Image 1 (cartoon, helix red, strand yellow):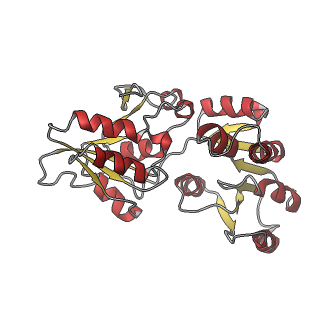
Image 2 (cartoon, rainbow, N blue to C red):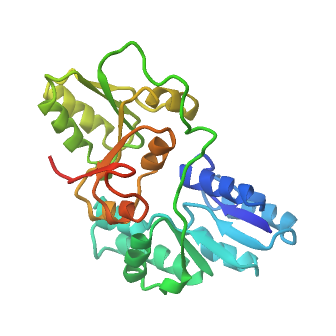
Length: 300
């Protein structure tokens, strides 16, 4: 099958990268049509690129994120359109992060983008069954449209390393990824305060919305058992976290945690690093407590 992978997606984002890799491994021929130019001009560029290959594919998949791309795609193609929703703007920006107040025009705009994309797409991809249940209710979308595609990992990068430990005799705990309220890193830092007299060290690798606040919290508590590394390229990330004795997932009390499985959970498990993450209905769809990983209550 020939597939047009279409939109304004970032190819390096794990969700897109893993879907592209999975399609190729299953024999699909991928034709990428992507443009990330700012402003409306990107639609013209996408139209021109698509026009050249419009007869060469059987199915179009719109990569994450692309709510604004779905209506445009339906205008320029008569082929089936599959949309990888992955994250709802309204759920993330309005309900979860509360960056926009409910009931405002802007909140309605985000809801409308989500609703219209789900209305127009022929099929919609999401990452867990629990997420499908939630989004279908939130956006009044037929459940029959949804297909569950678990995120998975890039096995070329995340795989067991030959040498895991160094001469450091400390028990190393690692967290890697984009730091946001969903992670619950404030709980992790406060847990490390209770462990400050133990031979344990936490590595926090990444940046993001909450990076500054988490670092300030660690400084306020005068914790010397936490090391901040900042963002790290994938080529350096895997060898670094391979030195950990334990890897962390998500721990906040956000309801969203129940609907998703953190990318890092897949990545750590692929590297054969023990994983500790918060209890989650979504995670339980794939992994059993004390069989594949350790699940903990999301509180400290």
